[in-house]
Image 1 (cartoon, rainbow, N blue to C red):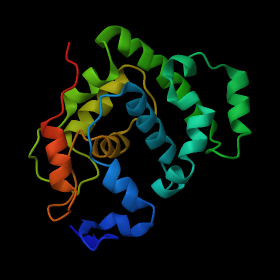
Image 2 (cartoon, rainbow, N blue to C red; image 1 turned 120 degrees about the vertical axis):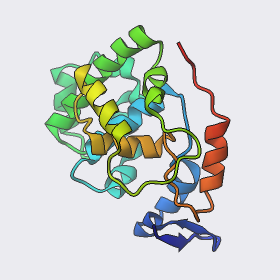
Image 3 (tube, one colour; image 1 turned 120 degrees about the horizontal axis):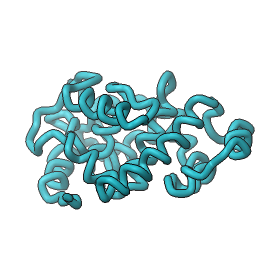
Image 4 (cartoon, helix red, strand yellow; image 1 turned 180 degrees about the vertical axis):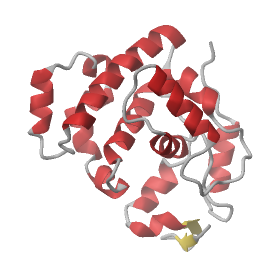
Length: 200
């Protein structure tokens, strides 16, 4: 597991070296837990858009995605129709891929159903989190991401393969995959240990 020096000279996960903007994303978001349903839905959606592309491409367009998809309010997105699909296919600020756009709309409908059934997305998704203190992994998938992927697909979600889901889990703090020597690992671990999400 590689490390690189950050802007302050302290060690960070090696992938930060791929782009200057990754350091801020790494230090302020990646691996830190959240129970915010809208942010969880946003990240699942953006990971789906990333499929076949680089995260740098998606991160650069994230504000455009937020504007195009009503800040990932899945209650609103669930009501999108063909006119909205046509609008989004003309939006040069996002990834204009019909299948991925339609998947976000479909998934918004599934998210709405999940909230009705479970109380929140967080309640469901955090059942698949790895326990605090787990060793970092270099794998692209895990048993937990495969199980979550299968559960989402069973509920009708799209563009939620195991690799996509694991990237989501890493980013949203369901697992702490900051490398052992990364200065942010301990901070993310502390955040995870103190994290409490709603249970039902």
